[in-house]
Amino acid sequence: MAPTILVLNGPNLNLLGSREPAIYGHTTLDDIRCLCESRAAGVGLAVDFRQTNHEGVLVDWIQDARISAAGIIINPAAYTHTSVALLDALSATALPVIEVHLSNIHRREPFRHHSYVSTAAVGVICGLGATGYALAVEAMAGLLRQAGTLAATKDQSHV
Ligand code: DHK
Image (cartoon, rainbow, N blue to C red; front, side, top):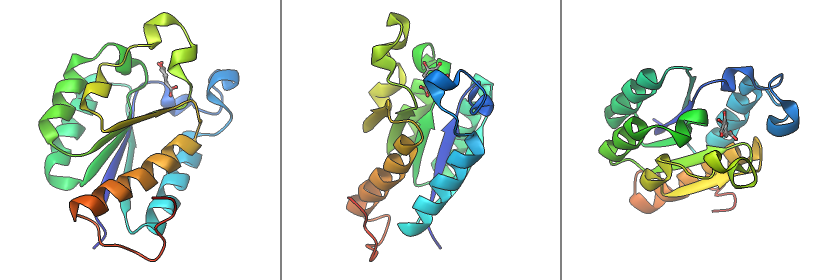
């Protein structure tokens, strides 16, 4: 059975497509889910894709991932800049974590330049829109192959 990666999305990302399209683009969260699933299938992974507006729910899902997932891709949205709870939960999993942002948070308001979550992440992708999620799936496959959690496949894409 294919190892599962958890792809988590934080507050307001359910509004993608209509929310500030000049910043976040026209791609919907459902489009991003499809992109992640198809990219994951190509590298031998399954995806558990979720969104919530609630910090504690994210913490619960991250804790559950310790037994149900091989790695976590997370766009914590606004909680990126505020949440020690998410940092602690991610650190406690010992799973590989990749942080994703649609926008380039470093080109935006100063309060978005700092991420609490990055301390727990192997890598951070930002500013590439939905493509960042696809790159994160491929990067996660590379990390899991290195760790021996994922067998090598014919389609190893770019990693
Ligand atoms: C999404 C959000 O909702 C913001 O609060 C972050 C992030 C940036 C993104 O670019 O995906 O600051």
